[in-house]
Amino acid sequence: MAKAPVLTPQADDFPRWYQDLINKAELADNGPVRGTMVIRPYGYGLWERMQQEMDARIKDAGAQNAYFPLFIPQSYLTREAEHVEGFAPELAVVTHAGGKDLEEPVVVRPTSETIINEYFSKWVQSYRDLPLLINQWANVVRWEMRPRVFLRTTEFLWQEGHTAHAGYEDARDYAARIHSDVYGDFMTNVLGIDVVLGRKTAKERFAGAINTLTLEAMMGDGKALQMGTSHELGQNFARAFETQYLSKDGRQELVWQTSWGVSTRMVGGLIMSHGDDNGLRVPPRLAPVQAVVLAIKGDDAVIAKVREIGDQLKAAGVRVQVDDRTDTPFGRRAVDWELKGVPVRIEVGPRDLENGTAMLARRIPGGKEPVALDALAALLPKLLEEDQALLLQQSRDRRKARTADVDTVEEAAEAASTGWARIPWSKLGPEGEAKLAEQSVTVRCLVAEDGSVPQSDDAPGTVALVARAY
Image (cartoon, rainbow, N blue to C red; front, side, top):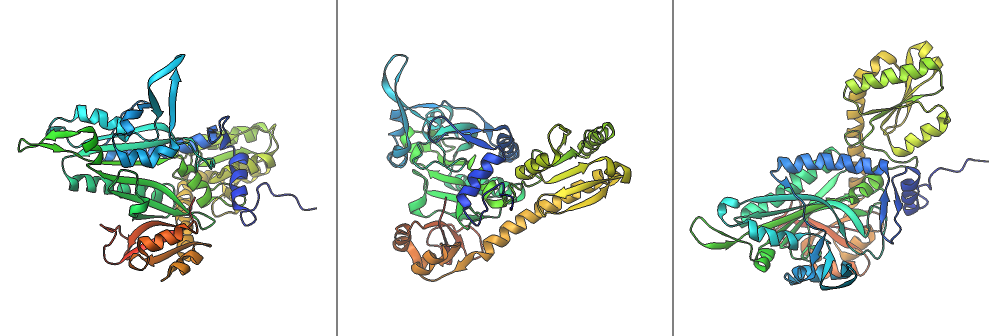
């Protein structure tokens, strides 16, 4: 009788495969309150690496980290009407604390535009205080009706950037810089995910923004996942909170603002973009563990050699872990590391020592081959870069192969049943967008024909990217 697969095959049930993988790879668990999650150490290790890479890019863009309170007075949200209307269904509100009713209810932050503007209005006095570029790493709460681990949870982790500028152009350009140079660079060159950078339609914009820039990625089942957004807030929040400055001309002017964020949703995107029927495949530039050195048997010489290899690889700049837990069967350990998607396994047993070789297993392209022990430290960095490039190419090839150019709403809806569609925005427009929404198909973003981000919804040659989405 054939052995049952460790994971539900993707082709049989993609959502079940996703849940199986999160469980078997020990990434996360459901929390005790509906919609919450417990992120396990290996899953959190992925998030930590994302944080490190993102934080460096955010700081290179000039932003500084700060922290703002979790609780926001409810009155703050009501100051910007479109913002509170957009978030009202998702708010968690505290009305009772310390054994009594609160004089004013407080909201558990769904995002921090309002409370940060309260302080921006205090900190910004003159044009000399601008631009003010702030980022925070935090948790937020949005009461989720259809939770799914990493993708949609009631509480999730993220970074949110908030900036104030003296002029519209400066704010617009900074939002675009975050969109491209921070988010786009990270997702493409570290996550190895082919993302489309585009502009949200008016219907899909962030509540209170005048423009939203997005990064959309195709998952393994052909659906779209919004990986991150960067918003031009205009002067809406500045007007509501009187965030103004004294200009060089001696006039009081409202600031222009941006906000931008990515979250633990990226972990879900990583899983669904690169995972296969054997588990995760983690891009080497992201991987907390790039190579694991496994002792096949508890032989003293083998144990000594795997530890020596571990030291050599560490010295060569490889993030490495030695697995000498020989009280656990080798086959089980190999499967566990395969599920976790570690890019390279180096397997060493007594016979390998006799031959002066190790068995090298590559998770991303697959396959095994013997490699001379003294060649490992020089070989691995090159192989890891090859595997990084392969994941990005596979992601890009999938998007191109499953994206169809269409001319009608009906054709767009049909194409979205198996992948993405591209349709001229002039042929779709808000009316066609509404018709697609009735079939649970959305316009993910608007792009120019040459792949750039259009400056306006009605810019000539603008194309709508249409898909079913998570």
